[in-house]
Image (cartoon, rainbow, N blue to C red; front, side, top):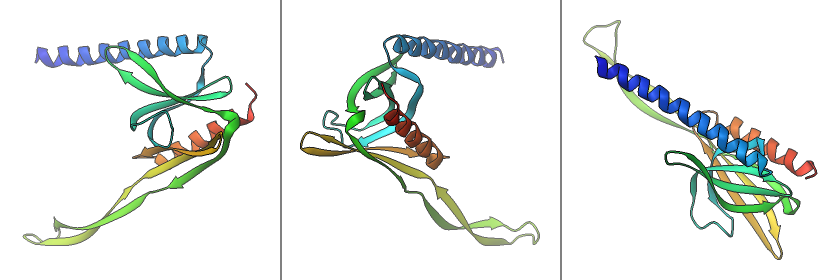
Length: 174
């Protein structure tokens, strides 16, 4: 029974340590000029940026000056943000939000508690939420469409909030 207590205390200590480490990293980034209060976190980069070849599972978007920075969030004993690419805010032409949620139905057999020794078949619907956020921007002659995604619970609301933050970033002078 003591090992359960030790594991719980260890997990709590790890959570506290990572929280403090992330706060320190954000404080350091703020001193470097990044806007950490209006950052977009835990968004999945899919495609469309000329400097990024692979998808990024956990990425964050930060504003610094006249640029939007795409950073890969990693944790290996300490929080780190690795620069992946940037988008000039003045070159953004459009921000599109796409709802890609869908519902699946399946027939499930369950015990019927009112009639013993019998079962009943019911149709069960499951909603899968997904949203894509596409930033269209010009780079000289080329038109890029950089795409990000949210999946899971509350994906549409998270993508809407990210879109609104991006619009505010574009409207604010550096």
